[in-house]
Image (cartoon, rainbow, N blue to C red):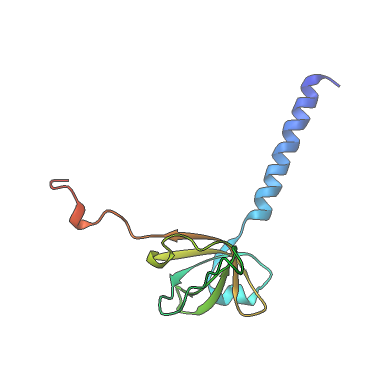
Length: 130
């Protein structure tokens, strides 16, 4: 085999591996009802932090577990077990996107969380004339 053939085969193998990797990592957006109907499937669930409930993070017990209550956009609330340390400014977040799976225990087990925090720019801080 020529050297160019070996390089071409290697490039094709890398492209196939990348395609398979992106397909297995993809998940869809859903509400909590759909996530709990399919507990083994990974979803992105959008909602808000329920500030009336306690946020639990005890690094002396488990440094990679934060527990809180979230309400999805349809109003359903559930306890979330986030497999990470408590994110900074969690209490100030406007919106949460949880990436994870519904558990058999009635909790949502998130491996990742994205937060939309309030903008640091508001009407009071706008520059005049802009």
